[in-house]
Image 1 (cartoon, rainbow, N blue to C red):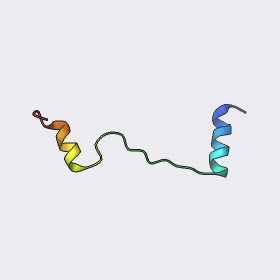
Image 2 (tube, helix red, strand yellow; image 1 turned 135 degrees about the vertical axis):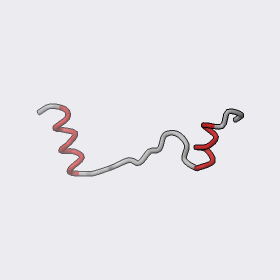
Image 3 (cartoon, one colour; image 1 turned 90 degrees about the vertical axis):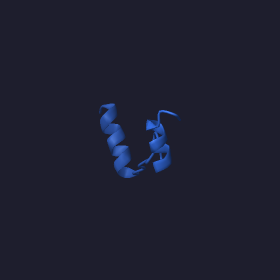
Image 4 (tube, helix red, strand yellow; image 1 turned 60 degrees about the vertical axis):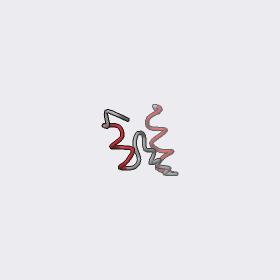
Length: 38
């Protein structure tokens, strides 16, 4: 089989989702992105 099918079968046997967050994680960090002074 192709690599995608192998990865899909491996995931079905042992699901391991990841919930990584890239970028601001809080409201303060989010607003600081748009603050021209900071």
